Length: 91
Image (tube, rainbow, N blue to C red; front, side):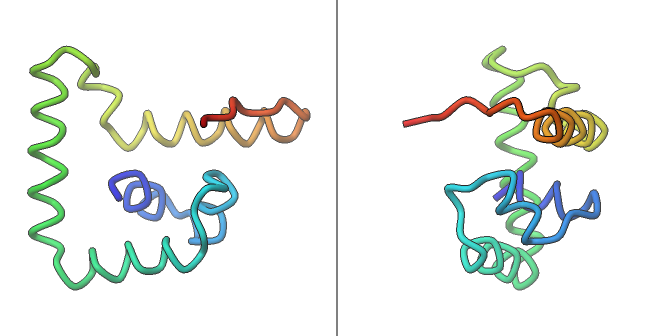
């Protein structure tokens, strides 16, 4: 959910999120956004707590949780797509 919210904050549409994450359906992205808009405080608290736990565990650097980093990653993804580089497939 955090990724969906961050990407839409950066100006991506729901369709662009689905394009970036093909395992998601457009309906799932809209459902996630709808739930977020209905419960913003709850979701924001969850995102903050999750980020704190990840930082404490050392599994993620603090800068990887910022919007500019997500935007950079999105640009890299788009560039890779332009030149025909396939993303990793996860099973």
